[in-house]
Amino acid sequence: MRTHHKLALAITLLFVGFFSSCATQGFVSNVTRADIQQIAQFEILTDVGLIEKGNKIVNNDSLTQIAQTLFETALTKEKTLPVTNIIVIEDNAIHNQVQYEIATLMNCVESKMRPKNLPIPPTIDSILCARNERFGMLVYDWGFVRTGGNYAKQAVKSVAIGILTLGMVIPVYYKEATHTGILIYDAKNHNFAYVANVEGESSPVKESTYQRHMQGLTWRYNKKR
Image (cartoon, rainbow, N blue to C red; front, side):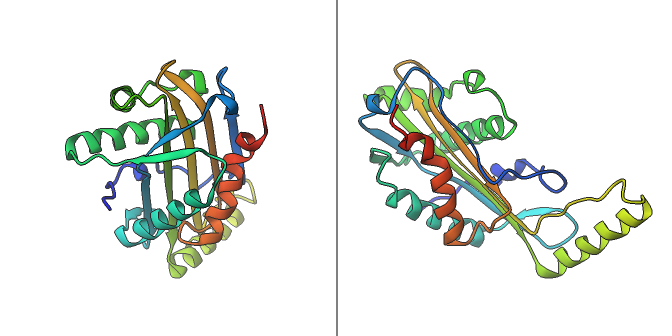
C-alpha cells in the first residue's frame, strides 16, 4: 500500500504547549447519523516521524507503515461507521492531490478552524460525485516518537531553563505524540457533516493508542441524533 511522504509533518508545533487528551467536535451540519447510510473511505493520510537530534522530526517510513496498519485495523473494527468501500486511486497524480487535500484539511482542523470554514476539497468532491457517493470519509494520523537519549537530554534542558528563569519559563518536551482525525464530507451539500479529532501524548506505534483514539473520534457519532 502506498504511503504519502512528508505531508503531515509539515506541522511542527507541539514541542512546547498543551495537549488535550480528547478534542472532538462531532456533527457540524444539519445531517444526522440516520442520514448517513453508507460512507466511501479514502486512503488514510499517515505520517510518523522520529526525533533523534534536537527537536527535528524526520519522517520514518517504517514507523509510518506501522502506524497506518494499526489505525486501519482500529477503523475496521469500528462497526458504527457505515463504511461500505475504500476508494483506492491508482493514478499517482490524483492520489497525491487527494492526499494533499486531506493534509490541508488536517492543518485546518489541527489549528482549530471552525468546521463551517473548512475549505472544500475539489478533487475529493469530484471523485465522490463521479462515483455517485454522497459521503466520503477522510482520515489522518500523524505523530512522532523520540529516542530515549534525546528525551533525556531535552528533559535536562527543560530543568536547566526552569532554574535559570526562576520557574518563569519551563519548556515541555513530549516524548511522543499522536494526532488522529476523521472528517465525513457531504458531496451533496458540499460541506462537512462530521468532524472529529483526538490528540494525545501517546505512541503512534502502539495498538492501545488507536483503541483509545477511536473511542474519542466516534463517541459523538455513536450518540443518536
